[in-house]
Structure formats: structure tokens, C-alpha cells
Image 1 (tube, rainbow, N blue to C red):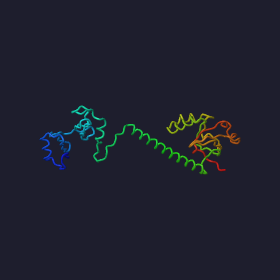
Image 2: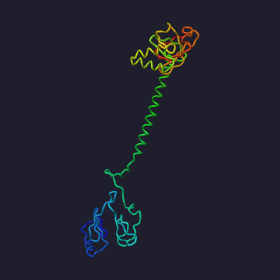
Image 3: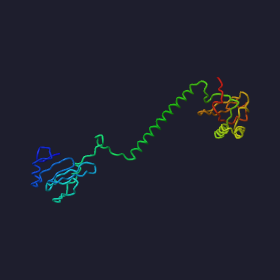
Image 4: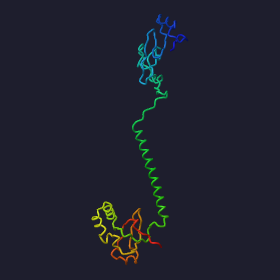
Amino acid sequence: MRCSCTTKTSLSCHRCKSHRQKNDTTCEIWYGQVILLDGIGVTLPLDKRGGVVALIDCTECGSKISNLANACPKCGHPQVAGVEAQFSTPVASPDGLPARKSRGIFYYVAWAVAVLVVLFLGSAIIFGIADSNKRKAIANDPNAIHADDVVSMMESSYGCEFPSAFSKALQHRDAGELTAWATIVNNDPFCFHGGNLKANQKWTVLQVKDNVMQISLSTAVQAQTDMKRSDHNYWTLVEWGIKEKP
């Protein structure tokens, strides 16, 4: 609390009492949100930020007016713009720190997108490294099958000239649909079954893609062993091939 007419901080200021008796307008006693002005107790309201409304001097007549008033009630002079901002203070949070500004939905959406991008890029890098390591391991494996290798096929193997037909044959076999599977693989010369091939028939690997490879009777010697299939190339599984040693 504050008394403008004495240095004593007491509500029982005799000088203030005498001032009030004389209707002296120079006496002010502040106590929390209550102000005694001209002998009248006035409770100051709170502004929209929770701070106590301040009293300021009118720039025209010097009377005490609220910092929220549009004009002086005594002389009618308009209040100077921006005065409220000069006296107001932001509301403090419970821990005593200034209140944080609320963030809009776009802030959190942007963060979510950024996290997803980072996760996607990280996954791509990890899978890329794993795939590269796998390819290096296969390339260094002396028993792995590569392009230009010569292989013989297992008796249980089968293959088709068109990748779509071979994929359907695999699906029927995995589902136990043997009739549909047999209809595809027995369609000579567009498909083959290992049980119908000649013993020790050799094939040349044209290309390898992951777990499948394309084989052909590309040499003259190989073509003579099976003239019916010499003009066709077949897709089959790498695991069904037996690599010939040089």
C-alpha cells in the first residue's frame, strides 16, 4: 500500500484522514486492489489479462482516470492511445514464468509431417544399406548363381516364358490348387516341368532378379538337347538351379 502524502505505510495515516475531512483530492492510499480516493473506497477491476487496472493522470486537466477509460470524466479530453499498453503486464503462469503463446493446428501438422519425412528417409536409408550388403554377399558367394552361369534344374522345378504365367503357377501351387497349376506348367513349349526335361539338361542363366532367374538353351549344344524349347526363355526360381562347376 502507498500513501502519497506521507512516508508511513499505514491505513491509519492521520494526515490522510485530515485531508479527507477537508475534501483534499491530493490524498491517495493504495492497498492491494482497493484505493481510497477523496475518502471513498474504490475496488479496482481486473483487465482482460488479469492485471489490476491502473489509474493515470489526464493529460489535459491532471485528474485521475482509469487507463481503460476512453475520455476523462471531468474534462472530457480523450485518453491518449496506447496508455493501457504502457501500464498493463502479461499474466504470469503458475510457475511465475510469462505465459506461452498457444500454437495453432498447423504448427502440430507441420511437426507431424516433418517426423514422417524423417522416418521415411531413415527407413529408406536402412533398407538401402541392407539391400546393398545382401547384393555384395551374393556377389562374393562362390555358390551363388549369376548371369552367364550354367545350371541344371531340379526335377521338382518348373518355369514359364512369361513372368505373369509363372507367378500364377506359383500362387496355385502355394494354395494347393494342383489342377490349375498343372494346366499352366504342362503348356509346352511356353512352360516346362523339371520332370519332363532330359537328364542333365544344361541351361544358361540370362539374368537374375532377386529370387528369380531367366534361363535359356542359348548355346548350340544346349539347343540340340531340346529343340522344342530352344527358341524360348523361361522364368524360374533361383533356388531350383544347380550351378555347374567350371
